[in-house]
Image (tube, rainbow, N blue to C red; front, side, top):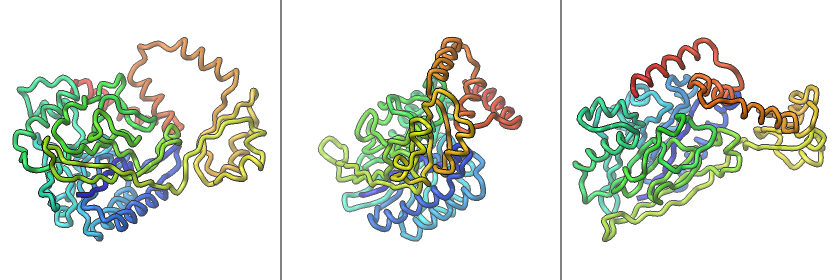
Length: 384
């Protein structure tokens, strides 16, 4: 059986206040082209379909068009919700979707649903495990000792294995941070890494299709893999190569595990994310910028010792989509060193999140966003 493994579409994502709708529509169409070319037996979407729990109408329309395109190719779709998704909104209409062979994880109720597909080697059970928090799992397993994310996922999967058919090959869709995975700046993290899950909890699955981390990689085992996001969502990802993970699952071997291999099908974005560094004079020289695609998205770091008046506007006459401008010189390095020296480890979660928000959006939180943050932190204290 051959299937595409994708995750972290983050439809509705904005980067430094730039809308990425055009880029996302383009990459979804390129994925559909790959489906028409490769004819996979299924497409797996491992969470974070949307960037917000309350997606915009444009984001919903984008996902609808993508799913309609997959249905038109008679390609089954298996999807779970991630930490950015609303379980109720993602699962809405799932009964109707099933008629088009689009299978979406329901709101978690203590049971991991699965979908069985067949090939020449027999049955493959695809288990749909949505993003889980310990507090969610405790409510369905009150007698289990659940103190961490690892405990939570292990408890759920142990219950799942007890009813699994040992003659069927098993694929798991999950959306968690597995210990040891390499992160990027665009991923939502829990301070201190308390949200990590040990890879051992996935033992026994022939392939684990992970979402949540945006860099394509295997972690813990070659069978446990992040496909990565189809687009670059931070400048820390500028050197990454985005792709579709094409997984081929063969027959069961003597050890009970299925043979498998993974190929990466490259994805070319509409606009690349590029980081440039140098003096203002260097970066505005025609000989420097002439070979570049000036419609790409840019982060520029100027090394001039003095600020260049009007640099942002002047550079944008050349680099039309300049998203971020920074300086790196003796003055900024001294300021950074002073800031690091004076920073104390007892910074509040509110302050840490405010820094994260400012870096992602280029602005301060408004009063409504501050209120929502306070509510989320209060709920987290209750969950803990």
